[in-house]
Amino acid sequence: MTIIPEDERSSLPLDTDEVIYHPDMIRANEWILSEYEAPVRDFCIFVPCAKKKPYHESPSHQIFDKVIFGLLMPEQVHVVVFGTCGITPRELDTEYPFMDYHFMLGKCNVAKIKRDFIRMESERLWQYLIKTRENYKHRIAYCIGDFRKAMELAVEMSGIEVTIVPKEETINAHVQPEKKFIYGSLNQRNYLQDLSDAIASKTGLHAKRDVPGGHERTGNNVNDTEWYLF
Image 1 (cartoon, rainbow, N blue to C red):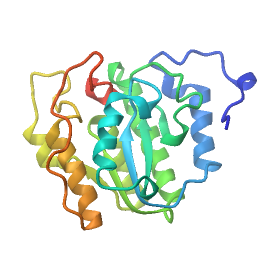
Image 2 (image 1 turned 30 degrees about the vertical axis):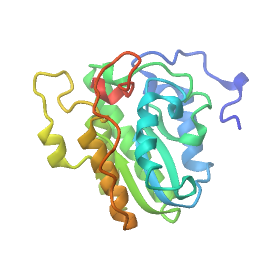
Image 3 (image 1 turned 135 degrees about the horizontal axis):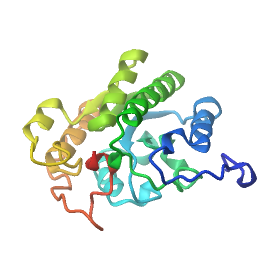
Image 4 (image 1 turned 90 degrees about the vertical axis):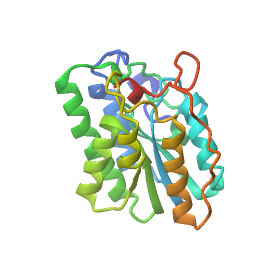
């Protein structure tokens, strides 16, 4: 599948703080919201985009997958990535432009861009929730920071239930005011436990108490998710 043929792609760079306005990123998201047919699954689990591409090979997504697929079979779940990429069903994460952009929104300090991101992303998520209303029995979103704000707005606009984790009380318990991003990494064990608990509560299974995580080192380790740098 090719969402945007090579000879139709913009020559504008995909590595600036205006990546959310990039014509190819907008076009790819419009295609997902209008042409893409989502699978029918018991669960849709929304997870943030990552610095390393493709997302499914990133350290953070591999940790998320250990939690998700430790409780569910692959045929039960549709993983959807959201964030700087807009909305990307993860089976499309090797497609242009989702594989090709390099800017991390978390490094952007331009207030207008951050406001525009929340507005644009909440509208896309709202449209996706409406579009896939009949595709999923349960929806869980694992997110913090501005990504969480966008998801919360989308839920409010759509009226479609999405369980958003980590829980607020878990986040508040991990606030570190001295850090640039005060909530820390989603790879923290207590945050991941909330994800595990949310999945288990929808299935009647017992949540696993030995979830992975607990490290917050950077570089080649697990923190390649860009919300961590907000």
